[in-house]
Amino acid sequence: MKRFGYFFLYLSLIAVALFQILPLIWLFFFSLKSNAEIFAGSPFSLPTQFRWENYQKVWDGGIATYFFNSVWITVVAIILTVLFASMAAFAITRMRWKLSGLVLGLFMIGLMIPIHSALIPLYSMFLSVNLIDNPLAIVLTYTAYNLPITLMILLGFYYTLPHEIEEAAIIDGCSVHRMFFRIILPMTTPIMATTIVINMIYNWNEFVFVNTFISSEKYKTLTVGIQNFIGQYMTDWGAIGATLIISVLPIIIAFIFFSNKVVEGISSSAVKG
Amino acid sequence: MNKVMSNKLFIAFYIAPALLMITILIFIPLILSGYYGLMDWDGIGAKTFIGLENYIAGVQDKLFWNSALHSFLLAIFSTLSLAVYLLVSFILASKIKGSDFLRKIYLIPMLLSSVAIAQLWVKMYNPSNGMLNAFLKLIGVENPPSWLANPDIVLYAIFIPILWQYAGFYILIYYAALKNIPESLIEAARIDGASASQIALRIKLPLIKEVVSVTIVLAIVGSLKYFDLIYVMTAGGPNGASEVMASYMYKLAFSSYNFGYGSAIGFLLLIITLIVTFIIRKVTETKERIEY
Image (cartoon, rainbow over all chains, first blue to last red; front, top):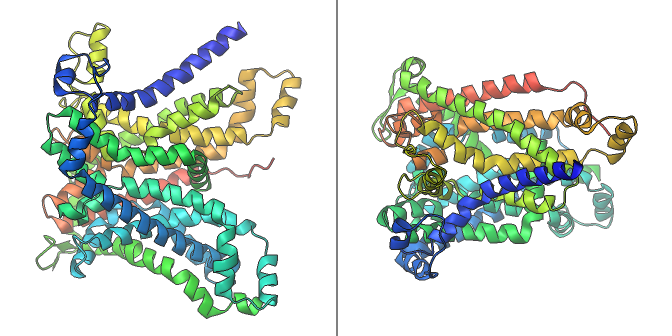
């Protein structure tokens, strides 16, 4: 009886896993098929031969530009977000000032607001300073909108650092900047890694800001770029599949290597919220 | 020591970059949104002050309430699905081999961009080659529906990928909370003769109540703001059948160039979100904090 129960539990867990992963496996298979196979054959059949040329075709067809835009925009925004959030966490948890609670509250409110409510004013602000259709607008918005969540993940770690560090450093004649950049920042490497991975997932996948602020093909990132791209290949499902797989691959690879950091980041950001 | 760590210049240096960014790019736009809502404005020409006209129109706008209804339906479905996620996490946390691996598999959809998910599910739902209808035909359904073209079904067809996307996220949170419960508590209950279901319902569930209430807030608020996937899959169609608040606002501003009215709707979206957050926080608030 007990054995039967366990078997049933396993079965339901595996059913959920299949539901979560099967669409992706199906996507991978159709990215390797020709149209004839997709339209005539069963959706469940394996590709007769792996047509990697689908990938070559979309890469040469223009995906590469979007891909590299996504890479540099993601990286620059991550650096700015994590640096600014670390500095803010340092000021809020380690330095003494009256308004620190109020400022922390502002960041927490930032977590709740729907970005769509700010979209129209952001658009008109960027328009007035000539930043529409400029990747800088994207980097700035990514940085600002990821600051609250990044700060929140960092805070817990900063609170646990012993105050003796600052005392010792100051007695030794160390300046505040030197203390932050040389002592505190390196100590927070584990939690910084978590925030970097979380930021990477958000930035890489972001859609609405790029869709609203960027119109030139040369500045588009993958998420928005693949939209038009798919329009071009309307009926070429192999090419569409390859495009989608290329767009999700970096995140999947990052997840394989840093899954524990992702898990840590997601659970700490949610539970503390 | 105290003197150095409360030096105003240093504090300003460390807090200013982050504070300036969120003030200029988050809070000022939010305030401006309320202000633009008072204007008749196409986004390019001059703004004309028209008072509360846009807000009054918004409150009387059938299309807006229709989209709000869809957002609330999504919120209800997301909240109900939490029970399923909770059940899965209970099974997962009951010392099952491979739970770590399964948990990571569940999480994968959450890592993908909404655009990729939307495109994938549009293909899944494709009436002639999609996996879903092929499967339905295989098990004997003669005429499976064309999911995204049917106004009666489209909304629910869109909910499936949204729930699919976030399942792993909630399972992960519940799992982490359940794993945090000290083994000694469960052991004591077992010695007192509590059954597995009693332990789950009477001991574990109350202990993770706070986490459950946080996930309810996240699910409801997340649903009210939901946008990306719906916009890419159906753009609110056919004929508004899958329109939600954020997609309606987006359409007003960036397709119809009705920036004043769009801002008013955006501001209403903000107010609704904040009120709902406040209410569920109050309702689900736990009086005593649980310490192990």
